[in-house]
Image (cartoon, helix red, strand yellow):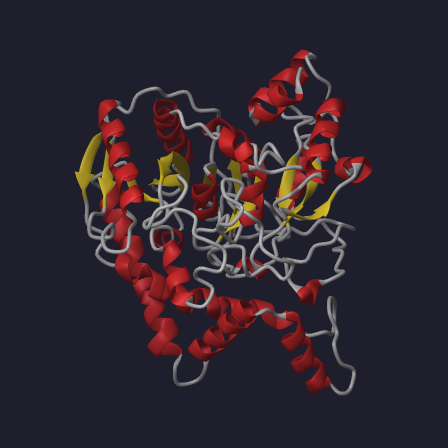
Length: 486
């Protein structure tokens, strides 16, 4: 087998080749570690060698044994640097491993390395990493999206066959859309959060970033399940199997037209409309729906998520682990350590969250945002009484240039306008590539994501619909694969 064939193979195809004896697991790992060593995208913050990649891996794990993966650096891994892309955790090596990572090791999947990300998963471009941004393999002058931008970049750029990411307000789906791959945010509670460094605990969810829908299904089945270490985890009843649908007959797809309006690039809208036509060609029915409160989702999210972050990040104080910048006195240690250790976006969100939770403002901000969240949940419940799925573009734009939005946080936040309502509702959604489009104002053609959302714990139906649509679209991601390694 040639290196080109192995590079182009999906996770499922690689597993089949190992199982048939066409190639050995050792040869597969050697190939991918070689790719990782040539990383030109700043996609990895830590790279494994052969011994570290196989540490704790069950060599008889099952159908996916021998297919390695990349892990976002927000997952604790015993004895391996875990920083959440923040200076405040520089040098931290956890004494335990996240359940998601343990599940993949138990399935026989070696770890290639820890991927770059927005600091503490706060961002939409990967530019908030304390270690520099990852680059989009389609155009290295552009962002890969965030916060799981490193995971998306290494999969799209041929530096890993698949990867783990986390999604709080769109942090799997948006970078998947920007990089031309598949990103799945499962139902909240379907995968354990144990060992994931917390940003916003009521929203954070692990999920796969892969090259196709079949791989997303296989990886989700490894990850999902109830975990005694996480009381919010319930798993997916019956598990998940590889999808096989080739038609969408009898399925209704809801389009919230009021949400898909001003601010969306012409090319993105064109690919979205093209995809709706494909759905109709496959037998699906397109239905206009209303999500009356979805337009308030960004505002509510940027009260709720920072409020939870201000609590979760209070543990980083220089006392227990990570950076300590001063020993002068206790107050100085807190202040100087947090000032030196946290980046500008993390500081911004801590201040926003602390203010929203402060005496006299709690009900006006946090309480009201929670009421909006409840209304958004009700809106989706109403919609799913009429349709099987809700569809939108994944992001209103294609990948933007590095530095283009860093001076305007609100414009950056609007990158998640289509993903955040789904996160607040806690329901599953998947982004699949819908084609290419030029940015407004001209430039190279770049991937466009198409987002499909489903009712809670309806992942199997969601994957079947996405698979049928993916097969019809036949997106070619080879241009991204060429841009990752030296």
